[in-house]
Each structure stands twice: as C-alpha cells, then as structure tokens.
Length: 326
Image (cartoon, rainbow, N blue to C red):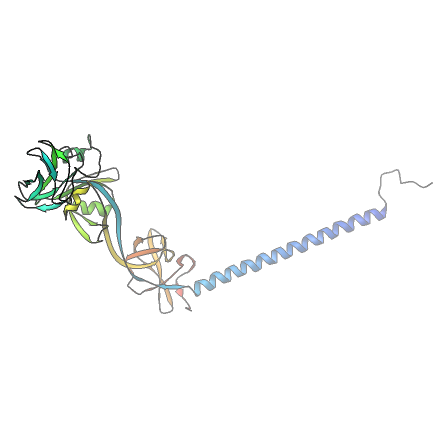
C-alpha cells in the first residue's frame, strides 16, 4: 500500500503549484500598483492643468459703490423735570382729555365737581402717573443706586368729560412737565472706536424706529469702561407722547464710510498687506487696498480701488500676469 513520504518534503508538483500562486499574486499586485500610479499621475496632471487654466482664465467681478455704517441698539431711561398736580379741593374728578398734551398757563387741565383746575405755567400735562414721580432723578439713574422699577403710566381715573371718581384734597391729579425743556436719556452702548470718537466729539447719531430719520443727539456726559460706554444725552425731540413711558429705544449709527465693494475672496493678506488682483486689459496686477470686511460676503475697500475696477474673484487661486477673460 502506497503512503505519503515520511521525510516531510512536499511533492514536486505541490512546489510548482505554490510558486505559480505567488507569481500570480505578485503580478496582480504590480498591475494594481501601476493602475493606481497612473491614476494618481493623471489626477495630479489634471489638478495642475486646472490650476494653471484657472490662473490664466480667472473669474472677474466689478467693484461697485458701497456705503457702510455701524448700527447698534440704544435702550435707556428718559429723564425730565416734572411736578405732580394735587387736588386743591375735594370733588368728582373729570378731565378735558386723557392724552398727554401741551398746555399754556391758565389752561384747564382737570375739574373737581365742575370747578376747573388750571395749569400754573406752560407745560406738558398728562393725567397719568407711574409711581416714580419725585424719585426718578438723574443722580440715581446715572449712579444706578436704588433705581426704582420702570412701569408705564396709568390713568388716575375718569374719562374725557365725565367720571364718578371722587378724590380728597391733596390727591394727585396728574403731572406737569415744564416747557420748554430738554428730554434727556441715560443708556449703555457697546464701545467701538468710531462710536467713542463721536462721543468724545460731543454727539451721537440716532435713528428712531418710528420714522427712520437720522438725528444728532448731544452728549452731556459719558463714562467709558470695559467695552461699554455709559452716555447721558439730550434727545433732539420731545413730543408729549414720550411721557407715557420712562424707557426709550432707538438705533445709534457711527463710523460711516464710503468705498467700493468686492467679494471677500478677492482680497488676500500677504506680508501684512491687503492685496487684490486688479485686471487692466489682459493683465492682472496685485494692488494694495485699505478697508475691512463689511459682512460675510463683501469687503469694503475705502482706498486703492476706483469705482468700476475689475478684480479677480478668487485671488488665492490666481497670480499676476497675462489673463484671458471669458
């Protein structure tokens, strides 16, 4: 009976099969490596060609006119001089009007049992109180010590022409705000270089949300500290309706600049300089500009680029020299 060799040496046929398998695997591996290498070379060649093509055929955009201004909200506390009007006698209280209004000296502001109560001087009169009369003063609001709570004014009672509210002697009937007088505001603002420059110059530009007009408010006092500026300003208006609340909101505008807008991608930083590739004829040339990103999309160039200039949109992928525009 035949058996396997006992010396541990595989048959010749087995050795041939093993060598053949190794050769096949090696051949396949070399083939794959060659294919991968060729693919890498082709890919690299394409990238180089595309980069060169993009550099010679850049996308260009035109610099357009643009204005820029910093805007920030200003919410603050209104300050005015006022005096509470007290009932000179007991009686049923009525008002000619519940709306805040301007009155002359001697005008009827209320009546008690039909007996008129007259304004002692020219002023705004409102038949509403908010409880802060006499304690809402500049010193407390500026220092923010024991600042009283803010609430909207509320009517004492009564209506235009008739009422059943009987008030005793000395009861409050409303308040007079002497006129003329300045309407003042205390507020905090985020500090910026341009805003601080305006404040030191004695003014801030404000825009009201009602009519959108830009007006100048005089700065009476200011205190800059840790990124904030506390300001005490005179508002350039004082309509009677402002008496309804001691809070006021508007928008402060500063740092107005004019220039031209180009994409942020058209500007690169090199050796500490801001540069863009300006195209003149068939040549792109690095040009230094001054300005800043106005938003996420556009750069405001305040110097270095004339209006209407053509610049390469993607300056990081282009270079100086001859270009072909399409």
